[in-house]
Every structure is written in structure tokens, then in C-alpha cells.
Amino acid sequence: MATPQVRPGLTHERVGVFTDAIFAIAITLLALELPRPEGEDFRRLGAFFGDHFGSFMAFAIAFLMLWFAWRAHHTLFDQIERASQSMLLLHIPLLFFVAVLPYTTSVFGEANAGALPGEADGRALATGLFAGSEAVLLLCQGALFTLVLAQRLHQPDADLRRLRANACVYWAIGIYWLLTAVASAWAVTAVPFLWLATPLVAGGTIRVLRMRR
Image 1 (cartoon, one colour):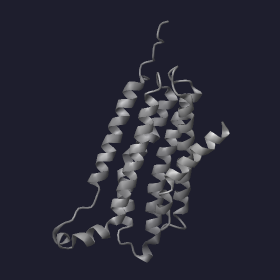
Image 2: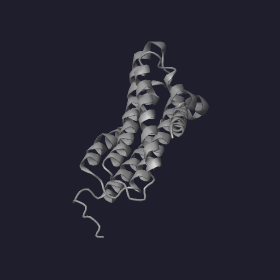
Image 3: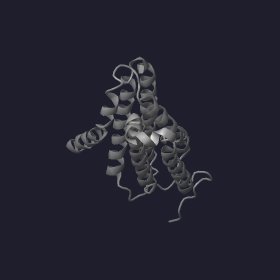
């Protein structure tokens, strides 16, 4: 049986390679945005790292989230035969927020570096921007898995159960991060601790899916 022709511009290999490059650049820029000690800072290096703890925490969270998002994207593209026009359109917000994440990570980190009580509004906005960027990125991943299943773009031997599970997990944690972005307006100091519960949200979603089988 002849392999169906893929329309020019919809080859998933090229989309995957370009996406890999954007993820790699974004992860590299995360490190470049970290604060560096200068002059007198070297005499109080421990205090400098303590003052900028928020920046390093933001870097660690953003790095891990980008890593897992890239792994999910890689897993998905290893199981599809072609891309669709709607998948390409969905990559616009996905890659936009991947590219902008180093900036929102830096803003969040600096806003939480030695913040004073009167600066709560700035911290809330910075936290909301960071969480919102992560949320859109995660929701786009969930939408990509959903599109592949709905449009039957997957390979004949693709693991459909895993694709459905990934779709549900990324929808769930994307909505969770969106809720933390909203919560930052009222409980900004508690929001970073809520992010640590992301693996629990993912695990709980998988457990619910297994119970429904």
C-alpha cells in the first residue's frame, strides 16, 4: 500500500526539529538570566545567594517544567505520521510562551529577591505572569495530544492509552497552574509552594484514569 503524500509544510519532522531548537534556546537563556555577583558581592557570597534565592528557585522550576514539556512533545512527535494545520497554529502560542519564559522567570525571581511588604502588588503580578506563562505552555501541550487523537494523526501502532493519559495530565496540570496564577492575587507567598504539588496533580490524574478503566 502506498504511503500517503504529506502536504508541503506539514512534515512533522521539520516541526519537531524547529520546536527542539526553541526549547533548547529557552533553557539556555534561563541560566543567562540568573543574577551574578559583582564587586562587593563576592565578600558576602552566601548572603548574595540568599538575597536572590527567588531567582534560583524560579530557574529550577522553569527548567524542570521546560524539560518535561519538551519530553512530552518529543514523545508525541515520535508517534505521529504528519502534522495538521491546526497543530501548526497551536505551536504559535506554545513556542511563544516557551520563548518568553526566561523573561517571566527573571521578573518573578527579581520581584521575590528581598521583596518588602509594600511591594506585594509587584510580586503578585510577577508571580501571576510566571504561572500564567507556564499554564498556557502546559495547556498547549494537552491540546496537541488531544488534536492528534481527534484528527487521527498518530501512527497505526501508537500507544493510544498513553497518548490519552498524557492529554489528560497536561490539561489537568495546565488548569492547576492557571488557578495558581489567579491565586497569586490573594496569596502570593503561598503560590510557589502550590507549584511543588504539580507531581501530585499529575499522579492523581493518572490514578483517576486507571480507576475508570
